[in-house]
Image: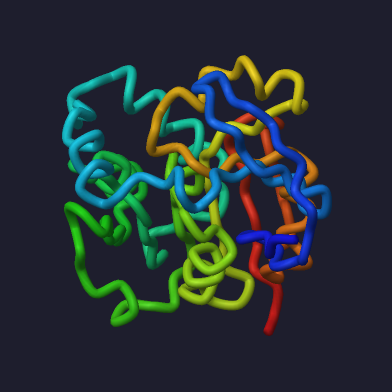
Length: 216
């Protein structure tokens, strides 16, 4: 028996092998697929991989990619919004784009590159977390920490690609990045409501998902 690191249920995980050859644990309760502890990369290796990212503010393709999240959240953004980009990476491109479009405040945070005080400016009206949730080693604990930074009725907009089936997972390109260690199914998004008090407002069914924090 193991305790699922997302839903905290005691489970007998099913083993499913990714395209990278790693045997991952599948939780039948929350449908997360997660790397076993001994397969998790250390922080030094993680940063060495992130240093290779070349996400520049003048890269139109990257801005278009981030705009999928920005556009989904845009009806809820106004000039007084207090916004956080959680896991911005080496360059805070999303914050730059949000501030330019909406003339509001957006704080960039990343544990490796922008390790600033995020609790001091909490609670937030909106938190973006783009291509971050798949890197969480202990997703239940990490997501709970992110949600705690939101106001009641605040919004969380995440980007993380969903797997479609365990059969598809076995040849899925998303597992080839050694820093991707936690993978979610569309059914997992519904379970977030129970686990973290979040209501799913909108999803594109593949990568971009918008939640609202329910009153505590």
